[in-house]
Length: 444
Image 1 (tube, rainbow, N blue to C red):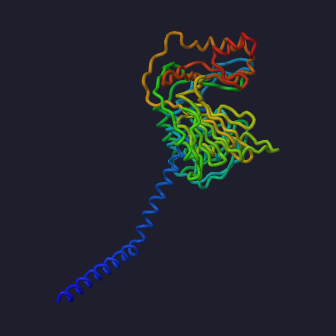
Image 2 (image 1 turned 60 degrees about the horizontal axis):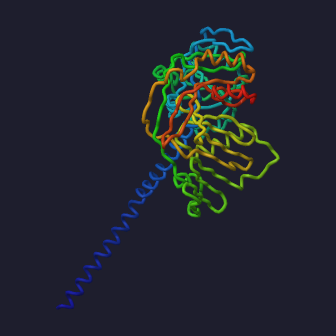
């Protein structure tokens, strides 16, 4: 009797195991699609995160430095050679954060088509009543900036540009071109973008004085000065937060501590080095000297592609210039560059035909705003005084640009941004007081 009971129990347990096995098989087979959907969702989420990151990096690096609203019938004073002429007042936006919001609005919209035209951009302007101009200080290439203005998968047209036009006569088209050239690229959107941009512009624009140097180079200064001295808490990026974006084979890296704030990560060949206020990435395989000298657009395209798809400090940057094989991006704060003697405040990328050979990036960044105060009396020189000095004392042909930029200082774990006049003279930016001192010493 006892043996019969034991056999029944074994049979019962066996039936449970068989049923469980069948049930699990049913789940695995019957819900295979659900597993695939779940995997697809995870992959799509990762892909979306990557696209979002690239888009934000592009906004931080490739947004124009000013957006101006023009009227074809608006009158301007005649700009004369060998002078600095105030030609008009314009409505414009120079605040980098506001500009990025406008470009973000464009980047979220659907594009219908993009194409090259060999017609003159003046034909579009003369058909307009009002139009927006988005200007860059230096040339950029459309391939690098495509994620901002067109379909990242379909856009394959490459032009060097310095200006983007949006006209009320063609309210769904952006025109990309370089001043002085005839051809331009059109990016055609599926809806009216002019009104969207106009609404955002009205909320954020200010009045600026437009000046023209020697009849050809222009700059813009805010008519009503509402500048402040701003102080921020700081934080330091750790090397471990950066290497994930730099090295592809993360399992083979080795971390070494060389000193208190000096660390290195290497995959046996490339090196990422952390210093007190900067990080340096070195890729020896890309340091091979090549007979062919890269064009400026090639250097920028390679550097930009590397930065927007990997690690970029979360601040705004704009191209400062290209020297040989190295491009420099300077930090932008509010409406102008931020220059510092205390900290690394620019990004330098050395590019060869093989790719990015060396990258230097800031490690110390601003965090929360601690205080914002009005400028002390006489903190800024009157613009007329600055312009009269430049006209009287310097070579007007070497005077390239002028802007209200920021002196960035680092004190006791605080970053302070103080407005100051900066002059681009003979291709380099100088604080106005430093420029006067250099002239007295005969260094200019």
